[in-house]
Length: 175
Length: 148
Image (cartoon, rainbow over all chains, first blue to last red; front, side):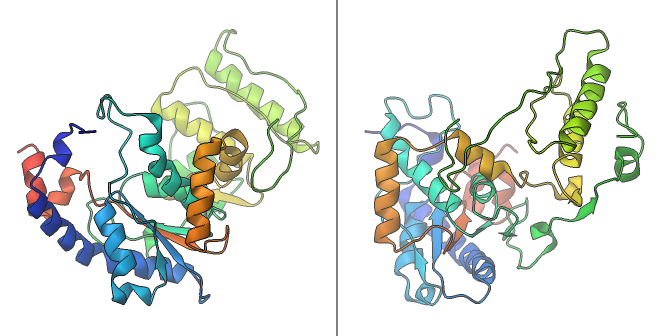
């Protein structure tokens, strides 16, 4: 099946070059953050990405074996499902590996994620959704762990809307 | 109710009321109705409640989240700036959804092949494709997909 999507139509060599660069920039940050989540235990890191090239490199590169990285070996990228008619002629099973990644992340103890909502969704359905690490900021730049974005600052339960956020436009005071 | 794949528990619901949209001053009514219901729920052992707000405006969504959190956490709640998915989203998700058999087989086979046991591994996700335009600061090739 040939998919028609502008994002996927760029030159393969340049794609590999860009992905290689991306790999160098992000892989160490992502794995370091995930490694912190292991809390000293020798447990594997399940690696997921929307690029099968990245997952392949993560799995087979010897430097990453020190992290005990595991990932399914695939020949195609998981498809994004947020584009209307982005994959004409596709069947439900064409998207199985998307849900495979998501639900396996959901079975993990903790999740390190960067940009986009897919990783954070996986974290949200994980065993401990508060045990997270964020390895990229909203601009895409890698950030080291631990960092403030991974924190969940909390306020006392009896804090009112006004005390927390200033004057409210809605009648929520006194809750 | 379907069973949770992870916990195997069955939730039991007790009807304590329904905050509807039909009355005048919809929004204030729903706020007060939910507050009263939450107070009543706090005094009984079954603590599940469904409410809805008239619109999805920013302010009402914020208030709904605030109301929800204030009655869902024991001691404290996340500050809005540090909002993540609610803590019990995972339980709601696994109660509401489960993979179809074909997908479940694939997942089980993959986890078995990778020696992954639920709760005994961590995950890392990297978004590599489908860049947002801010990615073009790092990856020059993505410039061609971004507006000038």
